[in-house]
Length: 615
Image 1: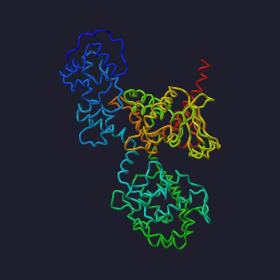
Image 2 (image 1 turned 180 degrees about the horizontal axis):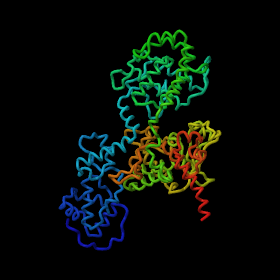
Image 3 (image 1 turned 90 degrees about the vertical axis):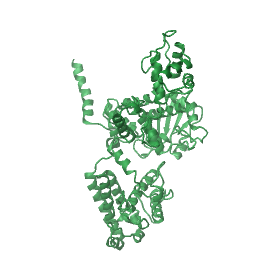
């Protein structure tokens, strides 16, 4: 490479923006787009004069391996330190043309962000190593459960109930379209959901406890899986019971042989029992409970029982039909007994702490997680040249920051409404009816406040709330208020485009194929997981990512981070429960990773003060 003569003036000004830096270096060395193109081309640089001119003016950015090679040649020509110009590229897009041959377009898009710029120039062995690492640690998640779930999801078998029978959780379906439940089973499920969800029970029925929409949808999904397994072909990948779909009825839930087949089928499929099987058995016990169980109060279901080869015999059916009440009693006792047996040997398959171990093991879990938000901002594109990409970056930053400050569940965060400054906030009663919270400006506290009625929370009846709303004034730390203001004044409108405004603080990027700006459970989870994949997981091949050893996870994991942080600092399960609006027992059972060494370290910190005083 022919080096350029000495520059015409000193290099005192070094803009952070790539385009301005390139323009400054060209001017400093007296280069035009024509002369620079000629020099680069002589060294094998594949670009044209127009492209160089567009880079200098900020109309385009280098996005391919060939264009990045040109940047390296320009650095060499101007005697700049390696990476001086390339390091200023804050591209919101992955390098193009990196995916290996044989990879489909969908996977190629997912891989592109995580492959190094020189992937194509590396040896076949190293390329295979990089691909295996990215697929395992970033795309699929790397845990035993994620690998199992990825494999199991290829062969769907669950029945699909229509919305009139079972409420569908946002963004989810209870089975594929070609597995619609038969009409008889649909009608029975409709009766069960109505019984457990209605404000008042039908005359002649009694119940204990009511299902909310989320619980009803979850129970529907679980039963859809069970009946789908019974109907799946025995010789297929699912290895089901091969029952005739039209013969299936909720009356089967009164038969112990059916339950024994199902929990053993799940154990063989997964390799061990989990708490899921125990919970399903407890559902069977509740449905056959004396006086209050729905099945117990529906003896007419007995006539719908049909044999299932290898599972339920005609003799079993005749025993049930002879005395429905006694059959329900037997099932109730059997379910409680089996649940205890399963609980004794159940193993944890989806360990919620596993993806977060590098964060939870840190001295300051919240401080460690905050590094991800900082990494998001570090890669923020220029808002003047890439306004929508910058808006998406700000949205991602605020998702992480508000998640850390609030500690609420995903539903409360994604459904949170917004009231701009200068407008009257919604009244508490209105928010109670909507079962949503709101971000609004508080003139009294001169700050952004989050107000959520207790009715909006999953555990609304918890002693934490005592029927009072949740209210928190966000701290103006780390530029949070400036980001909120910028998001509401500029960025949110760019994401919304011309679509209808759902009124929520967080909205999706509206595109031609999807005009719905509201997040649902699945899309919000995917947006959070994508941020972790791109900015949270330290990638040794690209240098991107904040935390080494981290794995993909969703927004619910922030609750583990907050609870564990408070436990490490205070040792108090009660104070940890305040951070996530729950009870100390729930924190101890599900959220706090408080190991013996953490407890010992906390005690030693107090006891060591004695030695400090003595010294």
